Length: 630
Image 1 (spheres, rainbow, N blue to C red):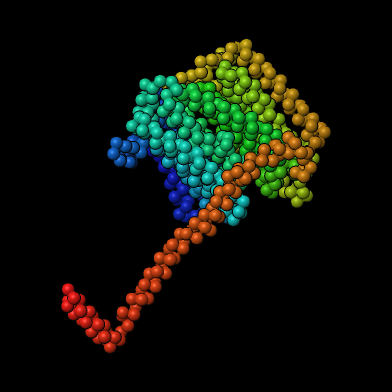
Image 2: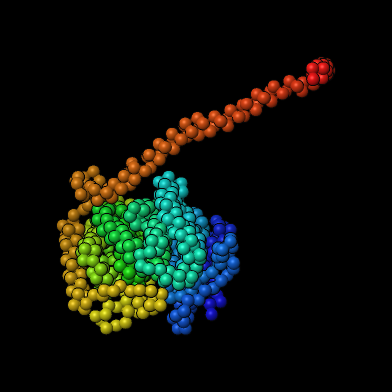
């Protein structure tokens, strides 16, 4: 049935090898063209696979490529699982990935090391596809580790900048912390079920009782992995720093691929999480705290990419809340819509930065609407989508998360509602400050402001269309239209939430959301356009909550004080007193002892024949004396 499915990840891998081998001999259009073509072909194959799954089968198909690992009772095949969940993720990863690749051709046009960049992008897509298509936790883990490696390479792409290198290392290390939890979870899965294959694990799990300690431990350990990859408290600080990479990297990492890996893993493991309400509640609480926490920080950020980065952290929190309350299809719905509007917003931000000659501070922008008509229009659509204005994509998925959360906990619903309001506030603050008012940049920047080339604007237009229409795959019941995504995913989801929102509540939620958004749009317009209020410079920010938010609650400083510096001191102590004082001394003493001993033995081999005869005589005399004594 899917005889060419294996080509979906292989094509980007071949693109990586080809571009990597030819490297700087390729012009930017050719290296970008090869990379884009590889992912586009993967998208077309993914489209064919999706269509086949949709039309002909609801039964998962396992495609074994070869026997991979055999050790005792452990036998792992390198195999892919094609079902409704993986087919949707294939479309998202390759579809949005293709648009980002095409955009990168224009964005990286003047970058001398463009071939290395495109080869990394292709390798990233390969590992992400491996993660999505794997039929067991080990193949998934291989892709999981691969995207972590590629994120390190892409974030630190401009490696001559020490700050960017530090950001890349930070992302890699924080992901490794989470990956350890994931790996321990996989070990426990094998100990519990004797297999790491999804089919065997999930079938075996259904015989376990609710909140079984083994299942709960597995779920928590897997979630630790998701906390690192999908940037949840306390392992979220790497993601805002990942802005050090080129803007297409930010879009690729933050939109449809790496950060959604944790969401996908929990949805794939929904049988396990459905059996552990304790673990699911932990997931919901961590997601809720992250969504609220990151949204408050976003209110006071002035770097255009940092605002979007904290927005991503917050939106991922939304998804984990949906996972925690058992609404796995709703979480995936938000993954899809978020992929559209967040990729659009990041690429739009990249177009603004491109026009502003690298400027990222929104206080130095303003009045860009006439000069960047396409970027402005598409960015507005992305802003309306993430704010949740109907009929844009974010409205449907975000309101669905609020509705299912209301059935689970009124407290969670209230906190998420406040978070939704803050999202709209910081996004419209960003929008008005960038595109309206007076231009606040330099004269040099003003003279160079121009719309981006078509290779950058066409992906923006496509993503704007998806951000406008993408929500209609999940229509609320009150519209008496089918929830296409929920029906499609039904065979993959074991249990759905017990509580569903009433029609009257749905109407009220839509009405209140719409009124709140219109009020926020008016108030932010009044503040930043009519009254021309500008964010304060760092030194002018008043102490208290504004300074706390501006400095991101000093979380990095706290980590630095409590973890990094003590470890640095411990390392310095170990180096001085253990490594140098003990180990080096022991090794050096051994060498000196052998050298001294060999110096003594050297006198035995002097090359003096008279000395050798004298030694022989002494030896004979000693033998005679010993013989007489004995």
